[in-house]
Image 1: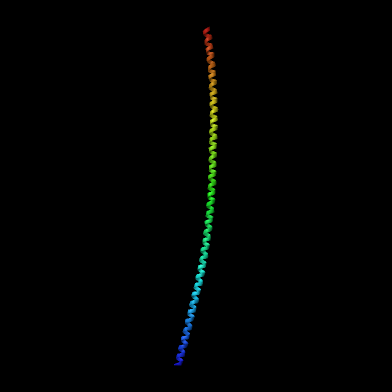
Image 2: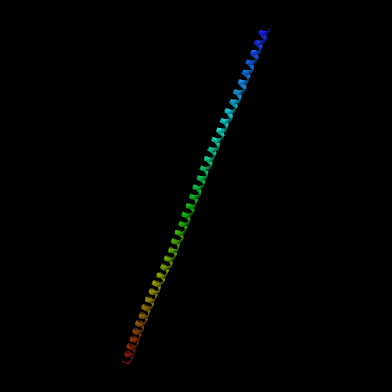
Length: 137
């Protein structure tokens, strides 16, 4: 009976020891899982921070590109306005040149007509004089 009780006591001790080891192993396993979870969470946080920084850099680059595009557009609009102003000025100068040429042609035509009128007047005076001379004869 004593031997059986001793054997039962030893088996109970062994079972308690085994149960304690299982609990300790389970706790260690839980700790390992918690450490792994924390490491994964830290890694994910770092990845998200990296992504956020990358997104911020991309947004900054986009903003810079937009500013550059707007500046280029502004320069092109300025150039176009300047070219349009030059074309208008050239058109005005051309109109002035045409007006001057028209005025010169009109003056030349007036002078030619006055010369023709004077010539006709001279011819009429000569005709009248010839007529009078004939009539006197």
